Length: 349
Image (cartoon, rainbow, N blue to C red):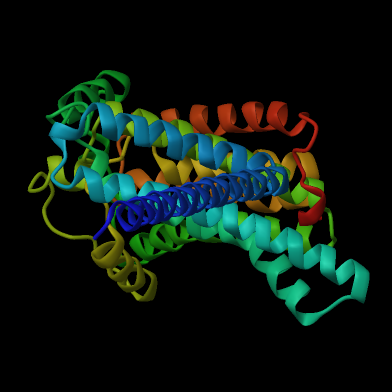
């Protein structure tokens, strides 16, 4: 190869290198632009999802954020912290996506007229909170020793005895008959109807502010109760005082139903405060504020339900009092949150 050819070859190689470098820089620039575009898209969608949220979601996502922070701090006390953290993140993402999708469907329905899809998403947008409450309660079984390693029942057993002079769950056994037991188990089961019935009345009447108010009262009350249960684990008389009474409570249909429910859904722990009482009292306050006639219908049932939690050996008396306080706090905090602009998302109305 002569000098001219060599120079030509070197120039060609240099040109090719420059072209390769230019194409590489172009691809890198395109990749960076694509990344920025994706990041911008995610940011816009996240902002739109948050805008579609209302007061209930603020409380729900706040609880998930707080419990996730506790998982991160006390991860060594959990068997599967990464899995639990992932579940929390997944639930939070599902709530945001759910609100965003419903908002988009509602916007499209406004332009094209009411559709089946809009009605479908509107319904589930309003009723998914019940599933969220159930999920969080069942999840508490994993969190009961997240912060405090041992059960604290001895303190509440002593408190009950100091207040009443007896051990209430044991003392009440003398009054037990199959008929009374079945009535108490019926009263205990009515807990599952309070928020559904109240929410159903408000939903039917299209009182959206009232509807989301009672959901937010309940969410705030439950969130406070769940937080206390994480720091102060109580397993309930059913476990801590097992063997103190003469035998299981005998009854009829409702006793059979509650035994079935407790067998498959019982959470060991999370007894203080009583979430049954907290949720019932929050719903009762909601009825007082938004449907006064329903308050008077619910009051005797809620009263019997509170007694049934002790009769059925599910809770201490102190749990019941704490549940009343927690439910009332949920109502007070929920009312305050509902005064915030955007508490009832337009798309959810």
